[in-house]
Image 1 (tube, rainbow, N blue to C red):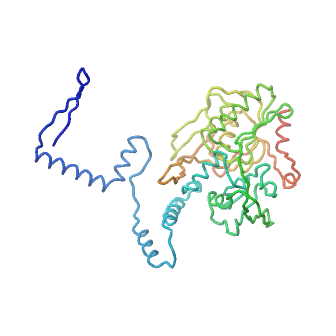
Image 2: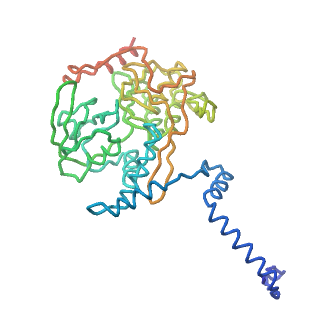
Length: 408
């Protein structure tokens, strides 16, 4: 075996020392290397799991018996009358496995779906209709209608159930699958069949470019109104800037409107809570009943002590519920509106091969007072419901109630 020993002298010279080869030692070393390579190949999953664990990366060394899957594929390939798309088969198999976990929020996203999710969080929707979509009671539902968009102009409303998209049934669809079909090239048309209460309706909507900021603000009658539509990477910064402008303007109270907000990044919820709370618990995460993390707000609470009302409804979920729960439990705000959606779990996004993503539930979160909101939600202290007539007449009774509370 030969080796090169490199040393640096005072003048920076490199000296190489050559050694002769011992045939026996060379043979034994080669045998050892081949043996290690063979074992590593046989147990590559276990080896990777061990290395990942050493670096604090959660992973598993378990493997599935895929003999039946391979047998099914071979028989399908041999007998199917038509062309098979191998990528579609692979993604379908993965999607089915993940869905079999039995958790609505543990999902597989292919590369296109993952890219769209990132676009959603950045507010760059592209060609769409201006409606946020979610799964409610196992049905694709319009969660929020954005202002001045094709969806609003066509007459769609939050709570509408989407039965078909371009004549394709949405039964069994995930949110991502529905979004994929609703979106498309700007200027093209999408057809939706909607159920609203007991009435069935059909809409033909022309897609337009949709771009929405996660935070908007205004001052009305001395009250600052802060609207947050989602929690993305910019939400904390934008919300804090709005809060500082409220304080400079001398507002006497603030309305935080999170109606229809489906959530987003946990860190953004922590940042927004920190506008009112200084170094206090925002949320506690537990896995298998054990506390694994405790997120606290930072110390610079620009609206600490500011009279605040939080507006929520049945489509306020996840991160918006975390903020509402934290402000409520610390008595920093009064909640007005309707009981929230009730999503009390935390998901981690894990990047897979070729840009695919696994969104997996890793923990359950609890409010500072120890409440987990899964399938329960937060019930506001002041219950105010918007009726169909209110929405038709653009009568926002919930906002009116919030402002009246602050002006008392």
